Image: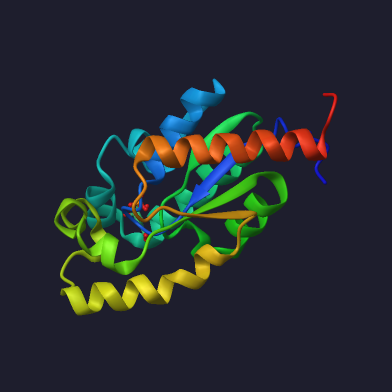
Length: 183
Ligand code: S3P
């Protein structure tokens, strides 16, 4: 326990690139009247350039270091909805801190559904650039174990953004009432 009530703990959203962490995070934040934080956007603001340009200019290692610094900072704040980049849980310190200080929700989308979005995703994701669809599929499956460390997993196939956001909001309210009644 970290002394922060369950109702006040920040909510962290994890999942592979392009599963909808940002869009769904924003919709949940609106429903719960909380601030929404997109970690990639925070990093981009610090460098005043896109993630792709940060990768190109400074390399992935620098991006990952900044990613860790930014996430650890936000994990210590209350009442936020925080969307992580899909590679954040590659770093154990990020994973352990998120799991101990925040409520971690994992968005799960099947490869078949994800593949339909590939063209919308590829250009802005440096990790996918130069890979063919077989290699991307391999990365997709290789990354899945990272998204198994969570407090709750939400399968989003065939659901629209509003449905997922409603489901998450209702589930959180139910959990808060069960674990922290009368607060
Ligand atoms: C990455 C995912 C991206 C971004 C960066 C690296 C990854 O975030 O952090 O391009 O390694 O999976 P999204 O998951 O929001 O696309």
